[in-house]
Length: 497
Image (cartoon, rainbow, N blue to C red; front, side):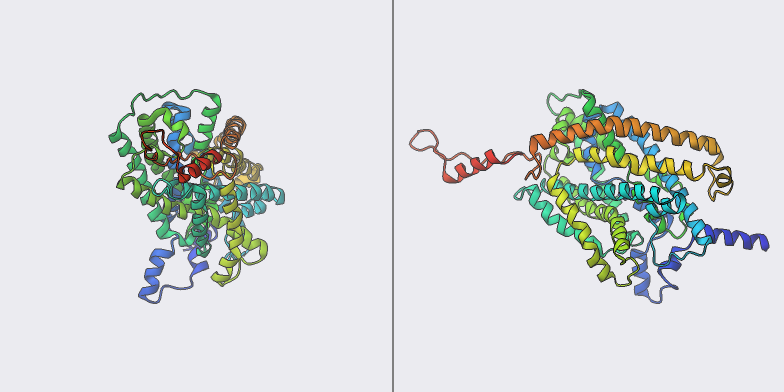
């Protein structure tokens, strides 16, 4: 009995119980039960849906573009390699979260109305300097992650309705995405995560099947990798693809038993690879080098009801992913202005609105769908979810006492502490040199090229020019432009596509 009681105490300390933090007691009626079923998710399955749904969003549409830069073989290998590396660092983050939370709960800290975030884990385990660095990188990455979702919304809807330019669509979807301020936490994303994964699954298999049925375009060429700049730009986009675990801590905190998270991200990555590999390979096989000038895969596939459905589903999913990226920023802002403990969701929602404004503005300045992913991947993702977690894990457990008292010691099949430190050193060196070094150079070169070509605040990035039909001939003479055509041609001359 004493042994069993001891195990229960240890489990309580390690796991915590999010249900007790959020909801006191069981649902009292059918309405509450239904609300909890759709709204309150904290199981391992909920975490898997959240990780899978958040990991593969608009980037699904840019991976064929990356394949055209990398070539087929490198594209496949980099996806598998960075998928495993991302799963490893997500595992490290989960270990550090459990370590931090266990120490705090032993000190009787109450997390009833408080969501733990990554910078607080760093602060509690390593001090304020680590906290400041982690906070800076994490917030900047999530800010631009939200920007990318907004850009993707405008880019996608344009392929259904091109009566409005992409900038105007950005205004519209910025207002729509602002409604995510009303979603309290990741605990409330249960139904959204489930639907989001169904949507990306449909889109991935639509891209695969539609490309195969379309067949290869006439004279298709597969010259990648042709330039070193393009090669490392494509590689950093894949680094960005599998670096979606900047919200790992918030997802874990929404779980009833956070210690079950350890392998969830790996299984989420395994499923994501069944979507990204076939779709990117099929689109690249069909269209080849044409993708170098079309970063959105929808641009090359013919218009059809199936494509329209994929676009609509991706729009909804991007709204969900915007919420995933922005919710941690909402929490940071709430804590900064002293609103995080407020019980009124309406007051918290009003307080969150200023966070959306800079995201909206940046999406209008830099609407470079595709190239911006690589830039964010090399400069921000490389540190936020690869280098910092690996270094933090090594520093937290650098002393023999810390390793001996670790809540979650490394498993034997990984070589215990020696194997873990070896993998961590490899991750830090590889990502710093290849991801940040070569990737940063290549992605910034490509990003600056986009600015030089299209300019900032460009009205419609990579849009084909729309020409009006020629006016009728006048008495067999040369066509005389009508005032409408003259005005339209002037617009074409002044607008940079």
